Image 1 (cartoon, rainbow, N blue to C red):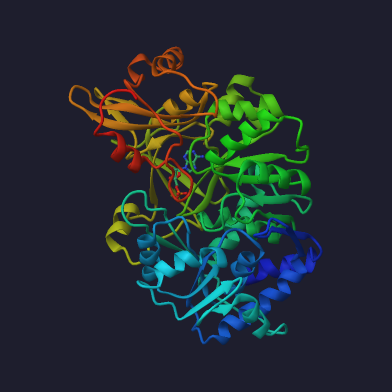
Image 2: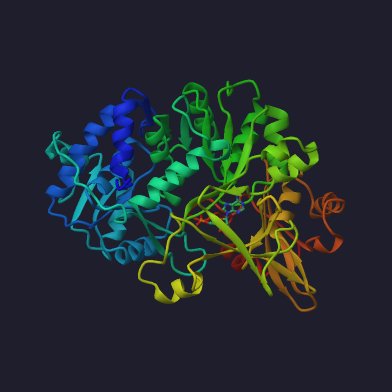
Length: 530
Ligand code: AMP
C-alpha cells in the first residue's frame, strides 16, 4: 500500500494488459496513422531517455506547441516518467501571452509541430528555450523529433518517482488578466484518471474507443490520454482537423464510443448531422461529453430527439481538469421525464473524492436547488495554488484550502450542480440577477440561431442590461424583434435584451468559448440594433 501513484504505472498498465489496442492519429496530410499501446510504450522510453540526454535536470519543464496527435501523446508520458514536467502551450494564445507563460513556467525545451514554426519565429525574440525540437522538418539549431527519438535507448528503465512530484503544468486561458499556471502531480493525475474513468457516463472499459476533441493543450484534454491508457481503451487523436465533417468521419470509421469537447464544437456537429442525418453510422457512440461552457438545452434535446445521441454535461476547469459529470442517480432513473431532463441540463455531480460547497452572503448556501452561491471545491487533483502568484493564490484559495471557482451555482439536495453564471458575467439589472447562460440557451433554441452570446452592458437606469450577439446558420436569419418575440414565452419579460447585434461569427477565446471581454469591448460603445 506504499506504492507511489505515478504516470509510469499508467503506461505500464497499457503496455502489459492492452499492448495491441489501437491508437489512431490524424496526420497533417489527413491520412490516419495506426499504432498500438505497446509500440507507443517503446517509443516513449526512447524519447524519455533522449530528453534526459539533453542534459535536463529533474523537474525541468518541457513545453509543447502541438495539436492532438500520437507524438504529443508520447510526450504526455515521456516527460513525466523521466522526472521532467510537461507544459502544453495553447497555440491559439496571443504571441505575447505565449511568451509570458513560457517564461513564467521557465520552460527549457520547446517541442513544436512544423505547422507552428511561424509562431515560433515570433516567439524566439522574447523567449530563450535551451532546445527546440520540431515535429517535421527541422532547420538551423532545431532538432528533428524523430532524430531525438532515435538517440534514445529502448532498454531505458524509468526511475522511481515520488507521487507528489510535479508531472504537468497547465495555464488558465486568461480571459481576465494574465493566464495563470497550475501544477499537477503524478498523484493528482493518477487519482483524476481513476475517478473520472469510473464516474457517470464516462465509466470507461477496454472495449471503449475515446476521441478527445478537447485539445491536449486545454485542461490537459480532461486527462483522456491517461484514461485510455489506464483502462486499455482505444484512442483516436484528431490532429488539427476539428471541423464537423472530419470529426464525424472519425466517429464513424473508428467506431468511437466516447467523445468530449466544448459546446461550440457540438453546435457545429449537430448542424452537420441535421443536414445529413443518414450519412454517418454513429451507433457505437454512447456519449458525447460537453464541458467548458453551458450546453444549451435545445442542443441536448436536438441530439437526443433527432439522432438518438446522449449529450452529457461535464464541468471542469484548468485548475482541476474534470470535476463533475452528469448522470442520473438510481433515484432519478425512477423520476418523471421532466425531472430527468432538468438534471441532464445541469452540470452533474462531483466525481468521487471531489468535495463541493457554495458560499453565499451569509455563509454556505443550502443544497435546495435554488439558493445561489460561489462554488468552492477541494480534492486530490484540485490545484493548490497558482504558479508564482501569491496574491492571486491568496484570493482564490480559502484559508482552509478550498478553491474558489468563480462559478455561481445552485446545488440540489442530491448534489447536482447547476451553473447560473461566472461571477463576473452575471448581470444585475434593477437589483435582480439575469443569468447569461440561461438567456443564451433560450436564444439558441431559435432554429435560425447558430451562436448566441450575452454580455452585460452599463445602463443608466437599470445599472446593467443584457446585450445579445447572434450568428445565424448559413442561409437563415431573423430580425431582432422576431428574436425578442421568440424569447417572450421563454424568459421573464425584463430579461429581453433591448440590443441584439448580428455578426457572422461570435468571437471565441483560445479554447473556443465566447470571448466576452472582446464582445464587451466591441459593443459597449455602440447604440441600437444592427
Ligand atoms: P477553463 O479553465 O477555461 O476550462 O474554464 C473553466 C470554467 O468554464 C468554469 O469555471 C466554468 O465557468 C466553465 N464551465 C466548465 N464546464 C462548464 C459547463 N458544463 N457548464 C457551464 N460552464 C462550464
